[in-house]
Image (cartoon, rainbow, N blue to C red; front, side, top):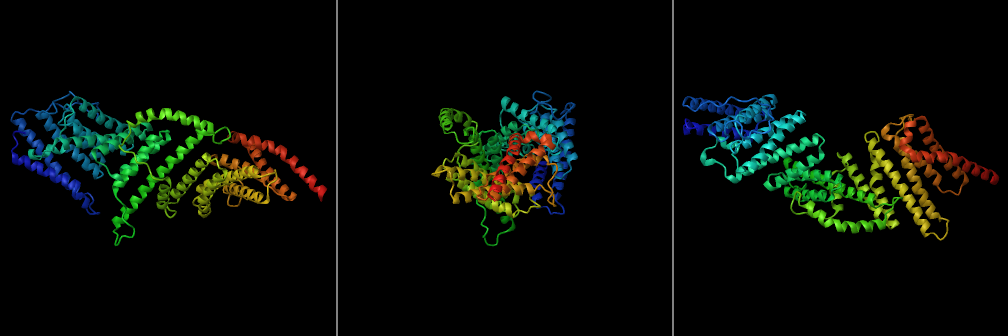
Length: 607
């Protein structure tokens, strides 16, 4: 700007610096009754800068500088501006970039003060000014920043595809610039900086790369909202990697994002990637420092809040570790179980050998694409489980607390599959009962009905599994086919406990007056019919030396088998959900009356 004297230009630069300080620093201290006071002042300064730039432009035109070319039609989402319009590094291009930068800052200012339509107008004015020029090192950073902001704006309006267009254009601008030029580009703040205060090449590069990192972060959200989960994970992966490289991240936020990404990998069976994300999350979360001690003297409200947030976020990462272990065990179980659900040791050995052959090359190739350098795995799953449970205590975190207990229970269920010692397997299931039973009985039936139903059904299944294990153990250890009284008592206790929880589940489906529903809702249809079938089977298995008690148990068993058959006859669509149970129930409805009649005849003879 040859016609502008240095004092005028320094005044513009000073106003810009003041506007930035008001926006980024002073606004943090604005009172609650004037939350945007500093930003309104910054807006006034930006408007003054804009007027000054326009007056400079008029002066240059009068001195022969010429007018900028007529602006072309704009849709805000054109692929790029490479090789079009005036040169981005020409005097006319620099004038356009400066005006566009003021429009950009005015747009962000209006968005920050919740004036979205005005913000959009200024941001689009920025786009139009830039599209007069070809992309160059003088304006590429602004090209990317403005499209990032428009992407955020439209995403906030749930216009995901419009947001996608702006962000993908920003991505295209970055990639093509790096391919065709790659030099450290001018940062937007440098449009209004005196020569002695220009940024170093290193700082320019860092800011430019950070702007593109934001583009990738926002695209990850967009692809997630569009249901493109694999693409979203790829962009999230790259964002986390770039944040570490640039050393621009909040440790706990980064760690939570990495832990969340791990859950995607786990659902895809990519356990190496999932483990690596969780390891990195654990390490990076440590950079946030230790939570202040709860016993610290005169703890401020801010310190108390920070301590609580750190505890919560670290507990959430610990929960992700539990999910990792649980899914790994469950997937392994599917691969290793035989036709009756037991561990196939021959197949286990075959898979171990095959895995050793594949593992080295596979991990070598996939690790080259991993996010982070070192891989520090956790010391013990138990400590992480306890950390999570300690934070998500019952008070105020009921749903979280129960979910953790259910995950913990599921871990023991999966571990039990690999345990060949039946006594130890039974103890693992007993641990599950000890975790779930007290909570199930304590929960308010009115407010936590669905959670209690889940827990009642699971407890019923656990007792049923323990009953089968005890019987198998007794048969292995007994010298004869006759069970001793202690074993019978234990077996009956487990059998009755299983039936009790199945019945509690069924009772929870009844009306307040205790009436059984004529029609079962879809979400409880199969569980309810399966519970009926299981209760019928349990009553028929109770061991008693008393014929009258045997007869009572068989009558109850027949009643429940009949319910399954009759319900499916009245509601034919239900049959498909319980094919096996219905087939067996139909068979037992035919056989049990014969057994009952024989027992009655025997009782009549002995009376």
